[in-house]
Each structure stands twice: as structure tokens, then as C-alpha cells.
Length: 130
Image 1 (cartoon, rainbow, N blue to C red):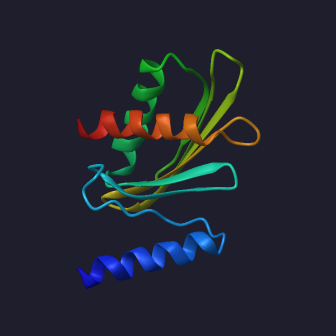
Image 2 (spheres, rainbow, N blue to C red):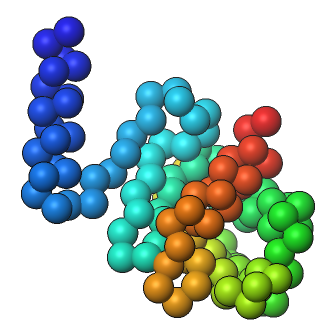
């Protein structure tokens, strides 16, 4: 109980200081180690190898009816550019973190769209872990 109070206090301090808090999920969303939305981009750490995450993102975009306009990767990094039906550009960057972790940065539109970015994050998670 004391640990819970300490955690709430820390989160409150971070939020009241105006910082973008990194959210750690203790099993609430399987396969996502953490995420944060900062300056128009959503950064997500998936507990999945780089190529599995890359393939899952492509499947998720296809299932959502989003057209991929460009895609390129090497062994440790990659980028997918896509376009929604409403002509909003989507940029998804991938970075190898470890054998079982990949950082993905999702940006929708020029200024960012947190809700749309979260939707894409969840669709990738579903492709990977459901």
C-alpha cells in the first residue's frame, strides 16, 4: 500500500511539473514495455524483435486501410511513410533496442495527433500479441 502511495505521488509530481511522463504498464497491455507522447510523436517500446514489429506494423496499416507510400529498413532502423484517406501523412520510425525490444515512434500529421497515434499503436500491438 505504501508503494502505491509513493507511485501516485511521483506521477503527480511529474504531471504537475509539466513533464511528459513515461507510462509503464504492468501487464495492462501485453507486449508494450512503455510509451510516451511528446511533441506530437508517440514513442512506444514493444517487447518484440525488430523484424516482427516491422511486419506487424505493415499488417496493421493494411488492415486499417492506410496506404504505405514508402518503406525502408536496415538491420537496426527503419521508416514507414503512409497516407490516410483524409490525406494526413503518417510516419513510423523503428529502432532496434535489444533482441526482444523495438522502439517505434508514430507521428500522424504535421503537428501530431495523439488519438490517431494511439490507435495505430494498439493495432500494431494486436498484430504482435493477439
